[in-house]
Structure formats: structure tokens, C-alpha cells
Length: 293
Image (cartoon, rainbow, N blue to C red):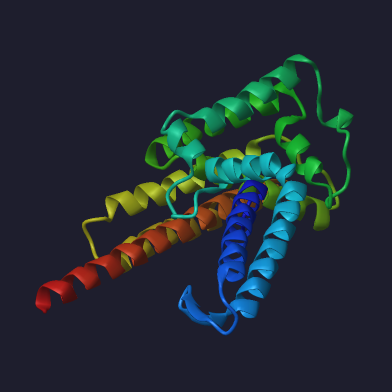
């Protein structure tokens, strides 16, 4: 996709080329044939092609000038995409790469949550109340029912978030928090017809992701099957265990969002682990076949 500036420059080249052809054609004698840009042309054809080139060049210049005002917006969008969404060459996005293993995502969530708790903003003062509103999920992540809920959530959220940031990066932590929290809020709203607030589901999602990632790291010296089965098995057993604890304590409905958050965060990290295992296996197979040739 050409920018306005590039279109103007291309149009100016076409106009210049057209004038060159026009002058060359006017200097030719009637009936004379010359080769121009690999094509044989007579006087009239040369003149007509020159005028056509000038006209097309001027049209492109006008379109470029009209588009020029959007160049800044286009460049800003491209810079933002490269910084946040990743560049076209498939490398890790610049923003996430720059943050490294510093737990910025954890710090932002904790910081905003602390500020809301200190301001006395609890779930009863929630602004949005629709499952189709994206801001509903954002607000319910930071708003807690009480100081006690916030403190109990942080027992898991902070250490698990820091550990997962160390094992992976801030982008993974952000995605796990989003997946776990959104899944818990959706299930609570659709199935239980109630509102789920706070970072509790996200904290358990991070805890599951850390367990999955730790199992993957511990099984790296084993086969690809083991590297896939170990994290998946731990996730399934732990999810069932949490579910059974809730059922035994008579609080299955109350603990459902926590189980959903745990399962969603662990499932997300499991998919990443399986993808990394397959990628490594493919590279190893390619290297083996290369050496065998």
C-alpha cells in the first residue's frame, strides 16, 4: 500500500518520463520508427504515449496529494502495530520485548486494584452491567467486593504472576489474566446470573499456568509425548481436585468461577506448551533429515 508521498513521487516520475517521450516524438520525422523502452514506435504513437503518460502522472500526483493528509495516521497505525501486535517478520513485538521479565502487567493490575480499594470503590458501585460490553470485564477485574477479597486474591496473584513473567514474559501474563477473568465472568453471568468481581479467577489462572509451565520445563529432557502429557495431566488433575474440594465443602456453585479461571488459564498455557513442543519436534526432525542427507 503506497503512501501519499510515494504516489506523488511516482506521479512526478511519470510526468517527467512523459515529457521526455513527447519531446522525442516531436523531434522525429514522419514515418521514422525508433525503439523506446523496448518498443518500436512511430512519431504519432510516441507523442500520444507521452501525453498519456503525462496525464496519468498528473492524476497520480493529485491522488497522492489527496491521500497525503492520511500519511501521519497510517504511519502511526503501523508503528503501533509493530510495537504492540508484532512486526511483519514474525518477531516478538517491540513493546513486550522491551519489558522483558519485569512484572509490569502484575504491577499495573495490582496498582489499579489498590487505588480502587483505597478509594472505597467496590462491586456495588460497578458502572457497567452488560456481558456484551468490553468495559464490563475490565472494570470487574479491578473492582473487589472488599479489602479481604483483594488481599486473599493477591496471595496467589502476585507470586504466580511474577513467576510466570520470569518463565515467559508480560504478554503471556496479560493473556492468561484476560482469558481466566473473562471466562469466569461469562460463566458467572450466563450460568449463575450473577456478577463476579476481582482478580481471584485471574490469580488461579496464573497459578495453573505456572504449574503447566513448570511441568513443561521439568520434562524438557524427556520425549515430546511426555512434554505434552505432563502439563496436560497436571492441569486436569488439579482442576478436578479444586472442583472436588468445592463439592465436598458444599460450595461448588460458589467456587465455580475459580475453577473456570483455573482451567482457562491452564488451558491457555497448555496450548502454548503443546505448540512449542511441536515446533521443537519439527525443527529436530528437519535437522535430523538434513544431517542424514
